[in-house]
Image 1: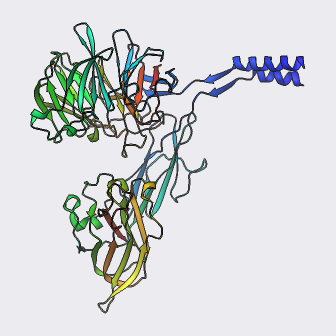
Image 2 (image 1 turned 90 degrees about the vertical axis):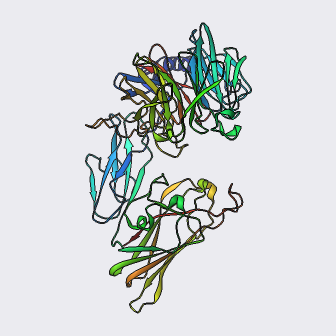
Image 3 (image 1 turned 30 degrees about the vertical axis):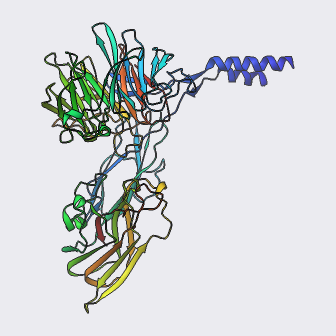
Length: 262
Length: 334
């Protein structure tokens, strides 16, 4: 018995991988990250023999998840997650993109603090143009501020009842851009007074050294639903750069590119 | 006891014969496909340490010269089997660009040092023949530290073209003995002028092929500095072009920001400057209008490739920046 085992061991073909390589994540391209009706999403991974597995609910794709073969048309807020696979390589890390459906678009916006002239984008309209800013901060989609507080007023043609407001911002501490400390939302009641509807605030110590650049930082704020024609957004910036930062003592930048009313 | 020992030895011997190493994968496209060999270099890292491996060049004897910014040995000299033949240089903390030029029989090296703000010409033993300091008299620079050269190219008449890729993106033309003749390019035309090469492929008057790395493009200039053509290469943060035969080879440091994202690969252009292969990257695809789809990394063979050296057999050596102090990878053409 043992003899047969040894013979088998000796003759069995066996190959040891010299070195194994990982795949890169696939590309996820949405025609619009922010949308009113629907967004078309294309996945790409141009490697012969590779397949892209995906989900739209934010879960990690597994082997029985759908394999991408045609553009996806999404009509609800979704998180598309995709993984590349190939028999010769180790599966790639997942790529994920969050798509956000807007419920209402404001008719006008009034900025009570002006962005720095270097990052003035297309003006206040940048906050409701459904255009997501990218890694190029001069792409006209971002507004960059250096003050303590940014206030903006959003006016609708008729009263809207929002359940959630999403503020799209970014953090890139190496470039002196930090996330906000606090965001407050106010709505104008039918009697003409401003009512506090909700807020978001940073509830943990921000360790900037552990943060890499994130150009899709969304602050989702559940608010009290009241019909209102005017909403006010008050964003408190991070403040001064921390003592262990190369720019210690200088004011941090705050960047905004969109405010979504749902 | 004896029998057991005999069996163990026979089994191990048999396994040694039959247990082969699975061949490394083949990467690339079309006629430019390569088997990966990360074990080409036989150097002992304690004896011949490297930080970033920046650029490489062949001499007439087929030896490979390479710049690294480790001042324990700024220049390593390899044979084609990856053994170190020589090592020298301790004074180049920013050793970066490396151009080997045959000066009528004698081969010389041009080494750019962006940390010491100068370009140094040496013989192959490392003896300094010429030093070009910052161009104070050009009117383009206010201080020495603004000049951070990354690459050189030598014209047919021996003129020296310096790309100030980490400085102000100017291309500076010097006579062979180091006198400034002309300045062109600059930040309005070039975004991160990281590499420059002499392009003689069309058989007519030579042009300069210059990297506009942050713009994901190569730009062709006349030696006088007239912009002749822009070759858009979306997704390719190109280090330096290397012209061999009718092809252009280059390392793509990254295919998207951030700069240290590890998304690099290698690229090959044909005589019409169309991408024909992207080893480690996506299959090149052009639309009906001849526009290239953005390239991106597909297989993580490389992190931040920084230079490509093709040999006479069509194999490639790939040096890398910021990739864990690795020696060059060998890509054997299949």
